[in-house]
Image 1: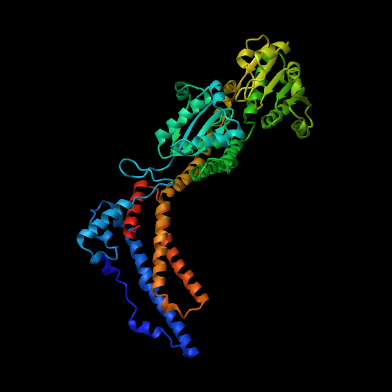
Image 2: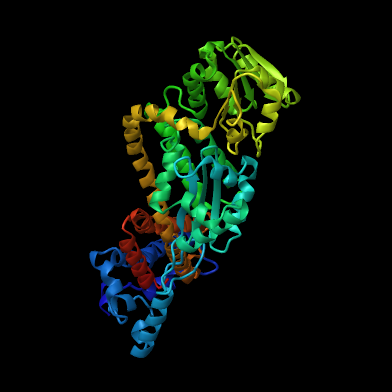
Amino acid sequence: RQLRSRTTLPRIPPSEIRTFHCPADSSTGSVSHSRQHSSQILSKMIKTCLLPLLLAATASAFSPSSFSLGTHSRTSLAARSFSPLAASRPAQLQTARWSMDTERAQPAPIGGTKKERNGKPKELQVVLIGLSHKTASVDVREKLAVQEENWANAGKALTQLPGIREAAVLSTCNRFEIYFVTDDVHGGTRQVIEHLSGRSGVNMMELRNSLFMLSKEDAVWHALRVASGLDSLVIGEGQILSQMKRCYEISTDEEGAAGKVLTRLLNTAVSAGKRVRSETGIARGGVSISSAAVELVDRKCLNDLNLDIDQLDICILGAGKMARLLVQHLAPRNVKSITVVNRSPGRVEELQELFPDSNIKLALLPDMMKSVADSHVTFACTGAMEPILTKQNLQEHVERPVMLVDISVPRNIDDKGANELDNIFAYNVDDLKAVVAANQAKRQRLVLEAEELLKDEKKGFGNWHQSLGTVPMITKLQSRAEKIRKQELKRVNNKLSGLTASERATVERLTKGIVAKLLHGPMSHLRTMENVETRSQTVKSLEQMFKL
């Protein structure tokens, strides 16, 4: 009664309703008068029916006292009074109705309705499981490595696990990472680790010692740092951004396994990586695995081969992006020659056009061992899943001192077996750590600048992710308001018969516009609430008041 006394809806006088109808033989002036009068009735209907209802509910829902409604008893008068029949029902029925409304007024989680033991829905969380050059040796990394063309299939296989809703795979020479979305962090993590152990053949104990696991905000922060090159072996290297972009493209493709959450996360990570590189100097200079490999040769060649770098004949196995970067960093050092071994001449010819001043030669795959034997240094950067340079074929063909630098994962060179041979000096990606240590020290200030930018990106994603919890509430609120709008129009439909089709369309637009404007404030308020508990309480209050 208290609430109804504040929001009493005036009734349309019967006299006005009677004068609305026109006789069949009315003159034009009478019809015009009827249309004018119907417009007056419509205006009064909007003022007296639609606006007070929505304004009262909205004001109550977002008043300072509304946030404590959830702690009231089940017989809360303010909550019950929104039922149109509340005043005429016996107290027992009102209490029973209130109990049922309270039980079904729980917000459903995005993507499912699974509940915890206390009855509250579980929220979907972003989880990351992976390993990198910081946590695992190349021996372990190559066992878990997935070729780019298989990223989509690997993600789909993960979503077949009971607790995994979305998944995306990122596999490079220095890291292997799985991003997935689950409503059970511990259970989902266990399932993914067991899946990885079965696929790779690495036992669970060894795998657990090598893997790291991050969830929620920590997983988001890690993804942003990876895309920005801050977590790379060579800080600021640009290739990881391209790889993260490919992860986004593959995961969000029709064959991919990314849903709404991972699509937004990976897109945010790529955007953050671009922003960091454009607004800081983190990417300036030669910063990549390829540049570090060339620098390693520059440092070691005199000791290993007794030659300066400008006296070296270079061989590169593979003609992809890594090979192009190798040539790019070798060219300024004026090496004697660069022989590129590839299955076909197409890409090698492109390199010759890109670097016309460098002495680039073509060698096809059957001539690989001859090219390796004739060169002082061989870089391996192919997509082979097994070593293509082994102790046996090196022993058969190589007679003079050579350096072998493997920047592939899985490894293309059996560096352990090769180092057992005289005059062969083999290195893998883990040997680049000492080379890049000085680079990291110089870039620490730039890292701090980049992380300040990433905090903004992280906050933006966090706000969006939290707003997902309000989507069901907003949808129900919109549906409830639309239902009321249609009911009120239907109630006075006979009184609007004097309007033309165009005028009726105008009425539809008008009432829809009023509803949209009234709901804009509450919906925006819900989306921007950062405190999870306050948002949850507000959602409950709205559901109770609107009987959603």
